[in-house]
Amino acid sequence: MSPITGDAMTGVSAMSDLAWVPRSCTLPTEERPLRVAEWDALFAERLTSLSRPRPLRLRLDLVGGEDVEDRIRDLVERESGCCSFFTFTTTPGQGLIRLDISVDQAHGAVLDALAARTAAAREER
Image (tube, rainbow, N blue to C red):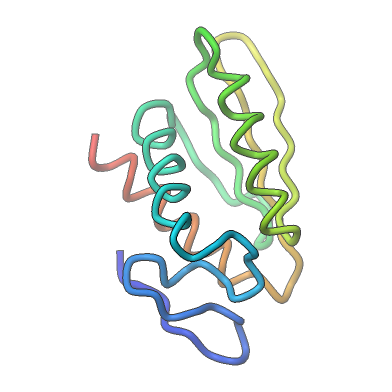
């Protein structure tokens, strides 16, 4: 994955591996690598498919299991608290959990970077 570089148009900060994290994120800088690692672990362990049904929406299907839905909901709740531009929708199904992530137009580049990071985490399995 090539990191996104910061610019005024996207509001994305230039933080090496965390370059996709937007400036509007209120999570303290020192906590960001830990949060990214949580997302990466979830994607690497559970992701079965990803798609872009619309340019500003990312759809992830994650393998369900014991406490997986609670884990996803907890992570989504914490992420919503620091990055209010994300809208998360979780839909449990037979053996999987669908996670839809959408953003506004101003944060499209953030979603693009998240999609690339998600695909990379899945490929590392």
